[in-house]
Length: 110
Image 1: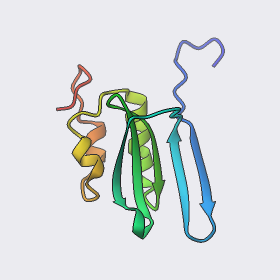
Image 2: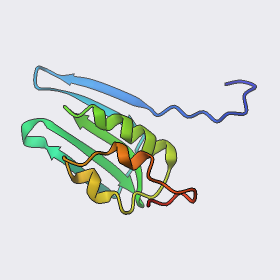
Image 3: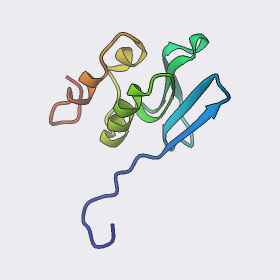
Image 4: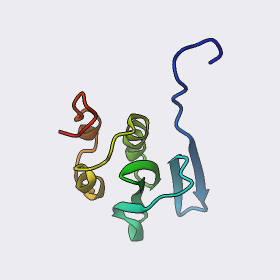
């Protein structure tokens, strides 16, 4: 805020109800992306789509997987290259909370 040296670190958020089918939640502000990774099953209405640009997460869209939003916010704020955790992002059984604390001091994934 005005007079503060701390950078603004709010991740944009949007949600929308689609009748009684699903609530979509979106974080990020992606104007463009070059890769989409899907976690879960869109046919069952429980999925997350991770939007990447040059290896960086730029946005995430969820339906029925709100817990993925916290991970997406952390990854968006960190600005690290997704690299090795790419497989975890698509595996619906993996614990994504482990990704947030798994970076070393240099910004790469362990």
